[in-house]
Length: 225
Image (cartoon, rainbow, N blue to C red; front, side):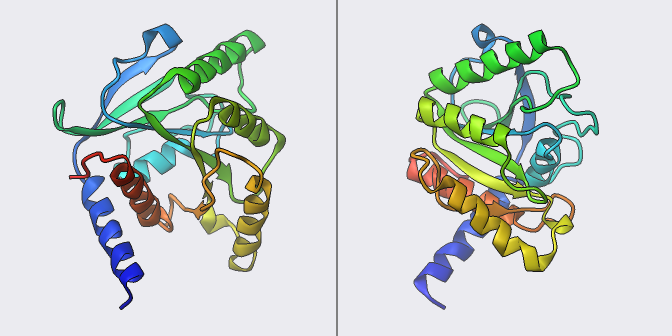
């Protein structure tokens, strides 16, 4: 087995153990002035409404109801913070569930408030290590996604694309979908080049996402267990 394969297997196993530990809801912020005190590194999850963020967070942490799953677009109306690991000083990482963008069954004033909250968080959070932007694998990139990328590029926030609902995309179309997304990121200064394809239903791609997060934490010198 090659050294690269050994390293990949090592990260997969660390990722499995890393996300098997305690993970609890700790904070909800509906205003940029009400964010929790900065602590360990944070990774945020963004995506169009109903892209499957809650399902992915549940699959990532091996839980059924860490994040609330709803068929109603716009259900997440604030920044929800989850602590991975025991409480301080053994809290390793925070997961941040962001409001869905692009559509919500609420008025414009509420959407504007969410947009202001997300932009304020992205611009001013020194502990934010990366934003994982979820894209519906059945449809690929849409205009609201590119608008989100623009905001992340302006904020100089590292982001990585995670395609969702892999189980609903024909195997023959999966590589083409990934290539199309990579092409859309080719000139994006803050975009990570690797694109992951996941399914919260079957678990496909979830171990690889865990491993990618572990690698990011190690690059930042943060503990991973």
